[in-house]
Amino acid sequence: PIHEILVHMTDTTTDSKTLSAAIALAQHHDARLVGLFAKPYPVVILKIDGRSGTLVEVLQETHDKACESCRKTFEAAALKQGVIHDWHSDDGDAVECLARHASYVDLVVMAQPTPDGAAAGLPSDLPVFVAMSAGGPVLAIPFAGDVSIEFRKVMMCWNGSREASRAFHDSISLIGDSAKVDVVCVDPSHASDRDPGAEMAGHLSRHGFETEAHKVDCEG
Image (cartoon, rainbow, N blue to C red; front, side):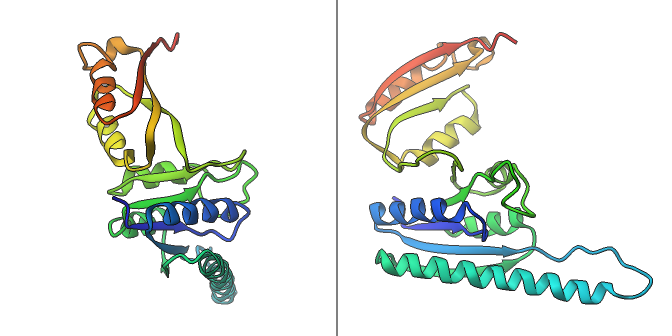
């Protein structure tokens, strides 16, 4: 069961879609929603004239303003939708902050950064780093297109590994009842399964899902 959800706020154009998805999930699971803003440490190059101290203060003020803006946006949206919520801010690297706070929630919801760099100061592959560092599931919301939290048609990438198994069991609470799940094995000759995808498809069917296994060659 999902009882607590963390949403990463960035003060960028992706916040609206990410927050909407997180609130919808919180409503669906009757879960508590936690907002988080990670304030990066100012990184400056020291100069002989000693002006770097002023630059640090300016950067800190900028981050504080962004944090306050995110807090107001988060709390206003959560109150409007009647979601039980809490707010946190943390100082440091975004990956480290998110991974640390992920230990105390059931799901992390965050944005896929836009290619034009709207999420200034955040790495383009931030969701990947967080997913590999956090101890629980991470849901990355695409920046493009409409997003629905009704997971009725799911593709599961399967290679028989511990990581793939962990990803499935972490995400099963999100998959809708009677959903169609396609189990996809790329280059199945390299998988550890005797019949790649078949056993996982059977396991999924016992959870009540409609399943089908697919074997695909990457062709280089």
